[in-house]
Length: 344
Image (tube, rainbow, N blue to C red; front, side, top):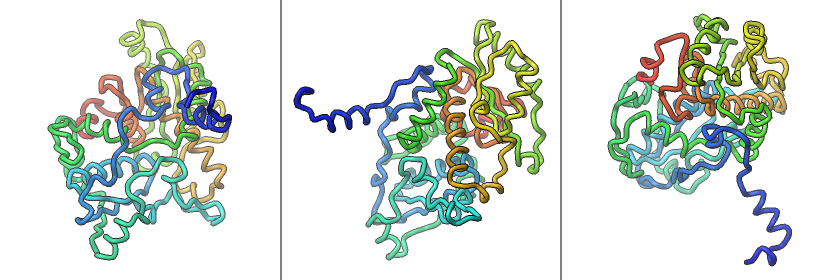
């Protein structure tokens, strides 16, 4: 059909389906368009064998981390799987009218077979469903897929694939924001004027203090940044994108270096003084959507930076590590960076 013969509604649909373009560095643009990798085929498994029921719960990036490892395990064993959110703390609200029915379905493209799929229903009827446990894929280093190990996944034609590469590839094929969520996040990130190479800081406070972690001082970020500016930015301080659950940290950075340019969603979104998971149950749907709008902007912003400085005591660091392309482009201020990456 020629463009002249296309109807106006069809032309509008074709334009709507085209990925939007943003003035962002290539590393960020990777997450602002559909993946160049083929999405996972969730029917590439033995439909007559065991089915895995994979739990998705806890904090978001912790839940995603374990979900990714269990998906890899399922493909390695050639077992079909579906994701269960029945114990997902992210859904629960004191006001039932503000409760989410699904977290994945609200923000992400579908992961795994639907629980309503005919294959899954038959597996349930025939008692072929097994509950996967987090301990299966975390307590054993070979299941955690630590750096340097090699893996074979016959159903995906992966042979002797190194762990870090495997997790990066599988994350890219499994986890994608829904197009409208992705476009909203990328539009917000673009508004910060990050079209050139930039640095990123990740700050996590909130309920991590109750878990026994000592918060990294803002001076430590600044000192590390000064060194990395020399090593990776030719001595010229770039814009610094700050992803923070506690927006007081942005004020602290600006007070320490008033001549540097710090960009952050904290300037667009008020009231963030440290994320506390237990407080989510009091949120409205509007507050939930706003929190995760900010969070997805920050994930893509961290993934898109030329160099990223953060802390390893948050699972955000784990997830962003596998969104990013290069191991050399990280620095964790609370631990030895390469040792942490090797254990992941």
